[in-house]
Image (cartoon, rainbow, N blue to C red):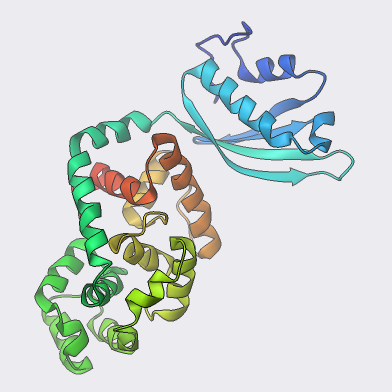
Length: 301
C-alpha cells in the first residue's frame, strides 16, 4: 500500500504528488521515494538544479504538492546531501501529520488550563527559592514519576535546601522515593547553586544553550531533566522527552523505541516535536502539556 494517499487531485490533474513534481519540474529536478517507516518518509531529490543554491525551495514546493494532493499536513524533518559536488543528491525526510486533529481537540478542551499552567511556570522562574525547589523536583522525577515528585516536593518544600543529607535521604525514603540515598546526595551536591540560579539562567538567550549548561553543571540532570526544569521555570523552546512522549511518538509511527538514549538521539526526537509544534503554531512547552493530557488525561508540570 502506498504511503502517499492520492484520493485528491492537485491543480495539475495528476493525483500522485511524485508524478506531479516530476512533471512540473521535469527539466530541472526530480524526486523519488526511497523508503518509509510509519509516518516518516524519505525521498531522494536529484537533477541539475541541485547544483545551485536554491535547492531548499524545491523541497518546500514538494511538501505543498503532498498536502494539496492528499489533504494531509506534512513537514520536512531532515535534509542531507549525498553524492559528489558535481551531481549532488539530497535525501529528505518528511513526516506525515495526519494525527494533528487529536491535538487540536485537546487544545479546545484544556487550552485555558494550559495557559494558566504556563503563567505559573513564569512566576516560578522569577524567585530563587522556587527555582531551587523546582530543580530538586526535576532531579526526583528521573526514573520516577511526576506525580510522585509533586507529592514529595509538597511535603519537603524548603527542606531541599536545609535538611542534612542523611535527614533528606530518610525523608525521601519515608515518602517512598525509589532512590532516596542517591537523590539526596545529588540535591545536597547542587546546593552550591542556590542563590545563583536566577542570575545564571538570565544570561542565556534560549533554552537550548541553558540546557547545555545545566546538563554539565547540575548533578542528576540529563537532557530530559534539564528540559523539564527549564519548561517549569518559564522557558518554552525545549522538549521534555519522557516515557509518555516516547510512547506517543512510537504510537504515531514517528520513532522506534530507542535502546539507548544519548544526546544525539534526544535531539533527533526533539526535531520531530518542533515540526509538530510549528504546524500547530504552538511552542514546545504548550505541545508537551497537550500531549501529556492526551496520554494521561492530566495536566501536571
